[in-house]
Structures are given as structure tokens and as C-alpha cells.
Image 1 (spheres, rainbow, N blue to C red):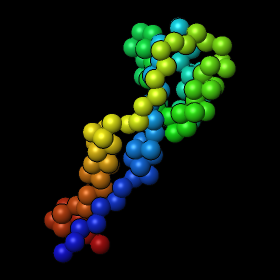
Image 2: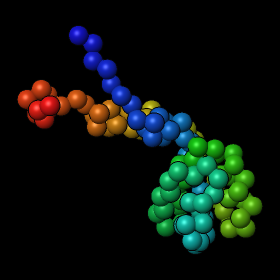
Image 3: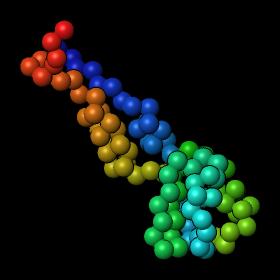
Image 4: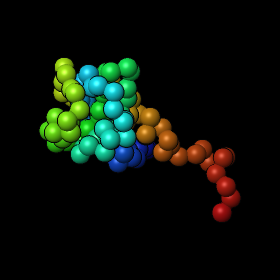
Length: 104
């Protein structure tokens, strides 16, 4: 018997994102989250990591925002991150064993 696994569209979206890392002067993180393409933001001091579905648009808007930005780096999502996103999502869609299903 072949098992089918469902993969959530959110997980596939994460796999297709790129990371924009930069040193960003103190600013409202909400303004950064609203940049085009941004799906998530992580900040550690001045170091900001933006996950973006459109890194080109994100970087252009970041520089156009007037915020002091340095050391910009754009990278793809690491293979390990993609694997974790896909397997975590797939595990949420596992069918329940027959003895745990509610009676119909």
C-alpha cells in the first residue's frame, strides 16, 4: 500500500523564500514586515533577517525606505531549513490510526 502525504502550501512557500540579512539601524520592525515580499522577520540587535518571497523587491524597498542599512546579504533557504519545513508540515497531516478515529 502506498501512503500519500499532503504538503501544506505554507511549507512550500517557505521553501521558495530567500533570506535578506542586513545591519539595520533602530527602526520599527512593523515597517520592515510591511516591505514587499516579507513573510517573516527576526532581529538580534541591529542584525535583521527577513524571509522574503521576492528578495529583489524587498531589498529595493529597504534601501528606498531611508533607513540606515549596511552589510546586505541575500541567500537562499538552506537545504536543512527546507527539509524541516516540509517534514514538520507533513507530520501534521498524518492520518490517525483506525483505533483513534471517531466512529461514523
